Length: 315
Image 1 (tube, one colour):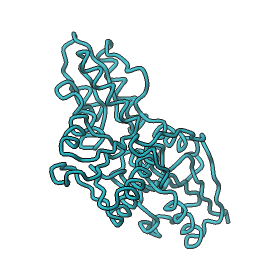
Image 2: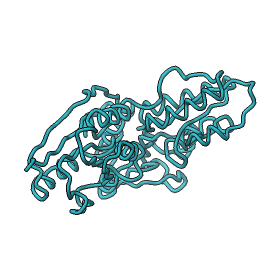
Image 3: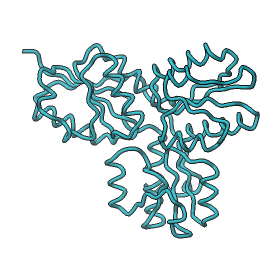
Image 4: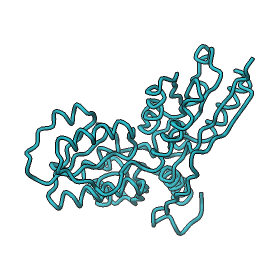
């Protein structure tokens, strides 16, 4: 009988922006004590958020509910400049842990808006990153989620147009929407660089590189994580049995029946120890005896901590 195999797909797990945000909260807890406030889930992962709540972190978006002078961290998903200024007026000690790649999109939105562009923003409605980015240029940004949104878009031929995107989108879905927009608005300008971040791109392409070898794809990540959901959808699109789980405790034995080779990856906000626990479970309970690591590309990106935190190395 063929041995059952696990293929650990790399890169996976924490990206540089997530690492920066989590380290920022750890340093703030050590420096300021509890409570430390965060405007949104620091990253979209149930385990990370629960652990920080147990340590005295309070997740609160309404700055008026936060005591003046309290440390207030902007999550990795970013927030508009107006929102950050409102927190400063409240007297909060603002620590901006926005992913620098999200901040780059914010800056582009403000620049294009100041130059009179209509900005066609491809993203997911109600996602924290989308909300923060679109708030940078109210009245000048139009949200598009699907090809159908692009089809129904009614804009005059004249006037400058440019597109921007959320950083954690499906490469294939985004390409389809962009193709439709370019066909419809041939004068639409390119922002000059892809807004989809390196980690999102790498994790999707790493799956594509091994998808033919696996019977099932397991994505470790939370259901509100955009980049994790895109990885799960990639497995489904390729016709593979696919699961998006917070941890091995979510696995059901019947889901693994007739599965000989399983590929495991993790969203950019999922801790590696959850992956390790899942591998142990598959080996010890479900008798997957072979573990193979495959690395599509080695990630070397690092981001500086927020300036207010750089003077200490406490983690």
